[in-house]
Amino acid sequence: MSSPTSESPRGSSRGKRAAERPPSRLRRTRKAEDVKPEAVRVPEAGVTPAPEPAEASRPQPTFDGPRRSLLALWLAVLTIGVAALLWSAINGVLHDNATLERLGPAPGWLDGAGSVAVVTALSWLLATRTAGRAMVSAGLAVVLGVTSLVVGGRVLPTGAAVMTCVVGSVYAVMVTVPAVTWWKAVRETLIATFVAAVTALAAVGFEPTVAAERFDLAALLLALAMVFTTVYRLGAGLHGLGRRGLIVVAIGLAVLFATLAYAELLRRYGAQTFVSSILDFADATSERIGAFPRPLVVLLGIPALVWGTHVRARRRQGWWVCAFGVAATVPIASGLVAPDSSYLEAVLRAAYSLVLGLLLGYLVIRADLALTGPKGRRGRRAEEAGPHRPEPRRFSEL
Image (cartoon, rainbow, N blue to C red):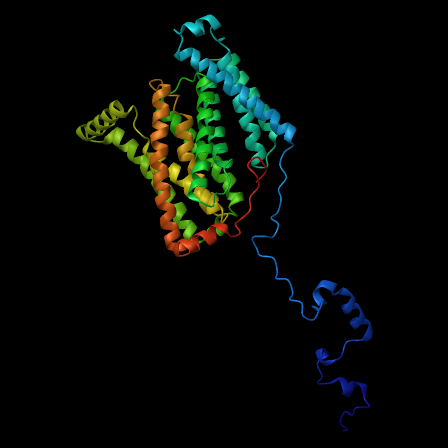
């Protein structure tokens, strides 16, 4: 049996790899044409090539928002509704003022119309922010709000007030943007608090008949369900959390349920002397400084907003931390619903809770930077000036 020789085509190709064959002239020509001129450019003699642009100087992606005219229209509706609610509130508080008597009392329908305008604008803004059907959401808000005012009773106005608290509280969290520093996180927290305060005026404008504890609990659970459903998409699902994110979410849920369960158990099954001592301490504090801060807002809600917006500047999983911000926006939004709560007491309670929560949020951020951030002041300044995770503008779609 003869061995394969070089003259045999079968024998000449055996044992050789295709990668060793030189490319054909046609392939070499096409490959040379596909190469961009910038990739094969040779620098001239004596000329130093320009360095590549830094990551921070590269253009960031732009995000398109709603049309400015449409956005201005809905912001105008929101402003008119807030003005109507403020005018009605001022007439209710200062009804014996001589100047207001000369101007005339506010119409009885003014607060209801203002509430409908505010909840409609907030529904449109929330749907626009979360990529929903904005006009459908605004239309449903108008129908439900007007129906509750026309029909009246106890159920419909209370349901409209709960809907207003839920929509406004969730939008107060969604309207925030990433914050690189603690001061910017404070700014975002103040914006969320302002939206929640506007929601409080709209909720009380429906004049609900409620039990304060049940109203707060229902609004908080519905707001948590809505915000977690939205954040599930924004935070890349549960699989994107990582071990550190799962620990943070578990701690937030533990603090939330422990606070709610402890308050309920203390109210129902606590020892009378112990409950009386706590209530006496809260009453004494309220008599001295005007109000007592909300523990849930101080321990969970405000720190979650501060730290969450700070984390969002680096990782999108910060949305899971921001989701617990409804533990602050819901109590603020429902602060005026309680029959025994005045405007001054609600404002002082929110202010005290905000200050204490901001301080706690500052400590959380410092602890996070000490454990995971760069060391030293220069390292932190360089990290703050470096590239960060981009997000759409405040009124654009997430």
